[in-house]
Length: 116
Ligand SMILES: Cc1ncccc1N[C@@H](C)c1cnc2ccsc2c1
Image (tube, rainbow, N blue to C red; front, side):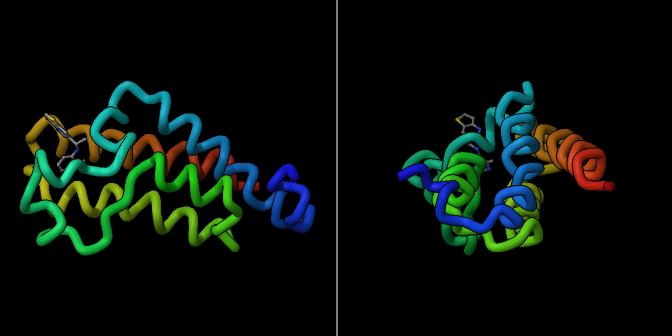
């Protein structure tokens, strides 16, 4: 069955901005470091430093599986991506700069989509 049939209309409407902003993030030029989970073979220290990894693909799966019960849960996962990025990457590194750019894009787009 279509996974959206099972959730109340209210929740479905409530989460619409989440799908929209996720699509916008995934298609952003600076999204490349955040599309998939950080490969721990490529970055062996990552999981020691970052206790709660997060990425855009994981958020998309959670959204499609109706794991978010509120917009706030969704927003927390998105902000976790950028907080992890700041923890692990220098601000002036390519990934660090991408994180700051994409965080500002997210907060601006999210405010536009949800300001009523
Ligand atoms: C967001 C993040 N934080 C810390 C480490 C990595 C990453 N991203 C991965 C995709 C990444 C980021 N940059 C490069 C450069 C060559 S492979 C590769 C993979």
